[in-house]
Length: 106
Image (cartoon, rainbow, N blue to C red; front, side, top):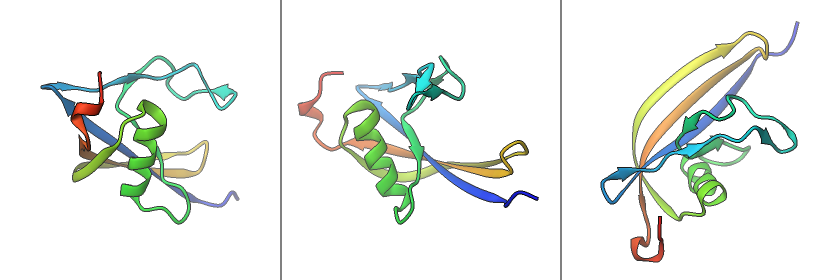
């Protein structure tokens, strides 16, 4: 029997000039087919070992959309079990604000 795993995912809902930032998922990620290619999503990703969810979201926002964010409050949590991967995926969604709004053109 495969070992059961937990995977923590974080996403940030970013409101900029009364609009929300969304991104389109790519076909390929790290040389492999991406999950849900071409779906619209909000920035985020996996929490790495020895990283808090807030640290992960700050890192992911910088990696994915090159924005420096402040993580405010958690607004959503859900979990889904993937039988094929024998993994429970838990997602945390936070409201984020930009650190230096004058530094960005979006």
